[in-house]
Image (cartoon, rainbow, N blue to C red; front, side, top):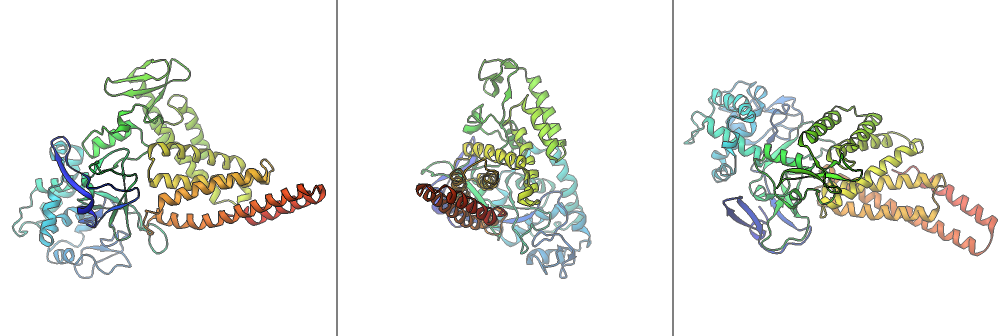
Length: 522
């Protein structure tokens, strides 16, 4: 729990409940908390996986004979193993009821770390809001019923384990757990297809904001590290985000209401245009240039140009049509381009649904570039990939102006696209050497910014691996910049000597050497 007492102060209010503020001024990029998880485990409805590392399971624990393990793991938590050993459960109970893993681990805290159990059970569960809902019924069928019928908590020390308590624990898990996104294995891949999550009671005290001032990174030991993304003043509320940044306000608010049971009122949510990005705006049907944004205080969709008002039924109709087609669209370049072009006419090119399709399109173009010899990648693919990267970076700089994982990835991909396109344009003589140098230097700036964003990621995560790769590529890019700079100096020297023939030969030779040395780099 390093950093909590020094950097956090817990406050309480009737409106927001418990929340935390900065205990002192905090610098940008400062690590303010390191927290171990109270419990970790799989998502609901996850495939059966190893209870130690969450990779695909292929065997049972030799001690308790119940817990699923993988080929590399010989055991799991000792207290958990002991509990299963004397539980008299059927050997297939966990395999048939894998959703019970996390609730069991929460209840076992009462036996192993009682003070942590009481801290866990005090977290917000939104029990009444959940009662009778689909998620309540899901837990009733796949968690509460199997646990109570198994009888394993019938005589559990002095704790009465009831259906209400199990539902409370499920609510606490749903509302408060954080995703442990991909610690990478020794082969550099993901640990199977089973993402895990962890419960971090101090970290989740931070309030939500769609423009947070902290960044959460999970290291290779499942510990959370919290960094400030911008300078934070003493007494300022510390905030994390539980939504995807490129979701529009409608999608974010829906996600928060359904998963976290509150409505966000941060600066971004209060701005109908989302700081000019218009991720939730619709094209006006009355004028050529206007975009209609939603004003929640006086519910209406109003044009920013001619003040025309759109009917909510029309907005719902085109939003549903776009969402349906984008979700059903085959992941092929031609199909994605068609759906983007079609719905950009009714939504807008930067609407969050269009951006979702553009992200899918970028992924397809990236695969084409990675799977094809650089000289055989078409110019149109390189150009389109660059355009998508440039647009995404511009949006993220507005929405996440501080340290940002997503912006770091986007800046890295932007540098790759710019370098690839610039080399091709130089090969086809569409740009000259000095323009090539300018583009490479611009790519260097983007790559350095990407590294500065991704340095906060643990080396075992995909982003941490990308940071390492980016640092290697920065070194290579600087070599390329030095070569092009020397090439330009030779060209200038030839011009000064007024030797036209030698200059022509020198430039041709330098160009050929450049292509040979750098054109196939990735």
